[in-house]
Image: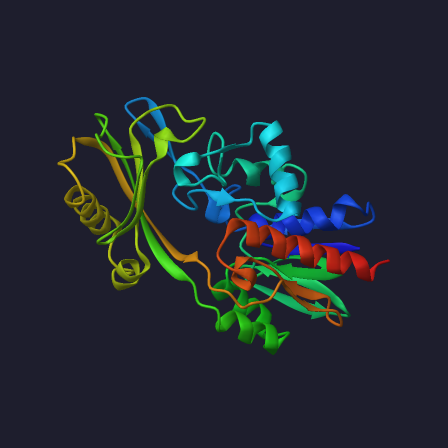
Length: 314
């Protein structure tokens, strides 16, 4: 059985893991438009004066409460891929040395094609063919899994299953503008800041476990502010959020790096479903937008869809 998965974030990789761990006769290939592993757990690098800076500019931490996910997190802990971060809560974890470390660990076991944007999917003689650009195509595949944000999933699903597409269209994500800044001196502030004016969350990224101690901060706007300024240019947003951060405490020291990143689909909605699956078409969807906006939910959605597909083969 050949399976194509569009999206190599937590949900897509969890689905691939569930499909292949117990069945050597399943071949899975994942496609992701990103340049490398991460998805919403991405990390951004920058070079300043010979220093390589790293910022967790997506998800800041995750929790592990479900037994299946806790078991995997224990494996990651043993491999030094994750560590606890008590600042964010007793059950909070971060990837080490960056948030994308768990995604890298999962992706290493699978055939993942990064920097590959899938534009559409076609059914041909009962099989799936994926198309990228005007002429590039790959296939055939026996099953297709869509593991991307709801807003991106809807167009891929619309031509094949209107119920799935409608569920995706009805599940709206919150956007988030994220600013990455390195200060030349340490800030006399707590390591985190929540809900302060325009700012939804700010954290001293360099204080997380496994980091190098440079004074790197991530400042994330709240959803309402991000939505109101969604189409502003990045430089304007970076300056505005840095000003908001300054207003929330003492004056800031100089900085030698400042950049902003726009997440159009940062925090997912929730469709109240574990996953979506059309057994006749062998078409499925998984992701945090189905179960709720947590890293753990993305894993559970993908793992449960993979288990459902696997059960149909027994």
